[in-house]
Amino acid sequence: MRKLLPVVLAMVMMLSSCKQEPVITVGGIEITEAELGFYLDTIKEEMQGTELETDADWETQEIEGRKAIDVAKERAVDIAIKNAIYIEASKAAGIELDQTDRGMVSQMKNQLIAGYGGKSEYDKYLKEHGITDRFIDMMCQSTTYFNKIKYQISQNYPVSENDLRAYYEANREELETTYMKAKHILFLTSNPANGLPLTKAEIEKAKHQSESVLARVKAGEDFDALMREYSQDPGLANYPNGYVFTEGEMVKEFEEAVKYSIYEEISYCESEHGYHIIIRLPLRYEDLVTFIEDEILSEKVEERMSMWTDKYNVEVTKHEGIYMGEN
Image (tube, rainbow, N blue to C red; front, side, top):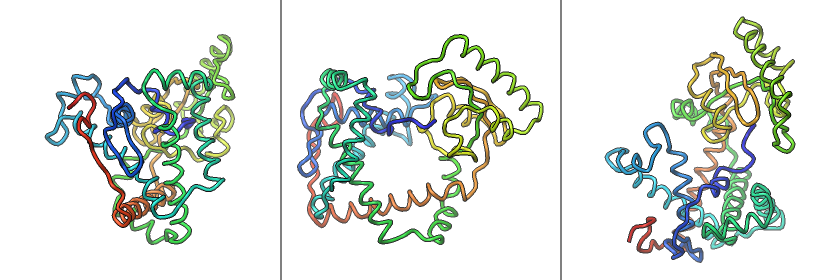
């Protein structure tokens, strides 16, 4: 049920055309205005809500006394710089991608190209929107460098149980706001192997079955028993206790059904995958351990990158016209 592509790469689909002058330079990496537009669209998607739906909303609504669009632009610049630093600071410290790492970069890129329907469509889209293949390579390398450094830190400085507990207690409220947990009974209306819709008769059957099982759930029958009997979710075997996720990791309809439910409430929605009968579950420490460890390690990566940037004098230059359309 999770999205196939990392959000940061999937957001390439939302780019708008921009000029090609470099607006940021980090070491040897130049970031163009079109590429900065990628980051801006990513941030806007993450920030978007009921009060930030239209272009006018972004210009008129404020966040802590500043225009929402200005906050989004600032965050976009920060992330663009950060992603370039993952590469440049690591190289300055003498760390290079090995054959396995390069294979991961290729796999990531091939996954993206396949999402466009092949190389020709991928090339066509990049040309139309002013985005280069070099930029896509940079994004894939950035992710790979980040993961490589994080793995090295995890091996040399393992996160202890005390570290995990301390982080949980200090950030419990934020964690429980950021993450959600839910189980669902899925009746498929598309083929999970290729994403193509089932026949009209099969979709009607799925709808009828989902409504019948929904009635049984609401009548008090055991949710887990019905889930094991009826759910067609390919991920059920790996996630029998439910999915723990944050915004942007699930299809929109599923995410919103969970987000606007209270604990133990039953909800129902339809998505591109099919019909979902959902129960939202309370989060426990055990549900969040993996995420907490990742947060701790990610913070250590950022500390390492900051240290290397200073130590090896990785220069960051913001040129004029850094915000799209501004001079």
